[in-house]
Amino acid sequence: MLNFKKMKVWEASFELVEMIYNTSLKLPREEIYGISDQIKRASVSISSNIAEGCSRLSDKDKARFIEMALGSAFELETQILICKRLEYFNNEESESLLSKISLVQKLLSGFIYSLRNVKTIA
Image (cartoon, rainbow, N blue to C red; front, top):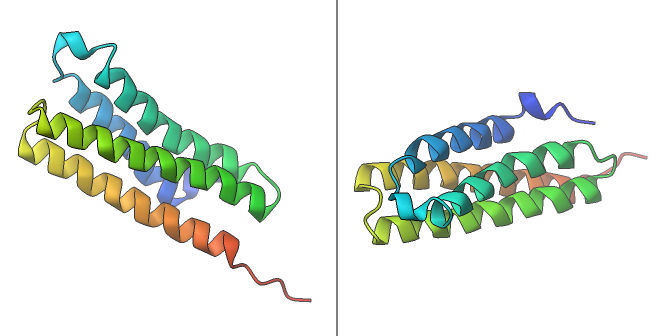
């Protein structure tokens, strides 16, 4: 099992959760059960799936959870783009979030690649 708390990808995704929670406070009150709830759940899902994947014994199982985390990252990106389009967040806030999401997506993709392409030495 991997110690997920020491992984760069988990650390970045955990920082993203914090950024999302802080930025979501700026959303209109009527969005508290709408987009606010969605972006929080998607961000939490990323780090949670990384943690759960790291508990799996096989690389195939690990990769499946990391792929779910990647899916949540793309879902979150879409939701932030919606917030940007609706002008809920200013350009600086949106770009900061999108930059962090992009980093997390790249790290997740690299992790998936490494899990799928592990060569065992006989």
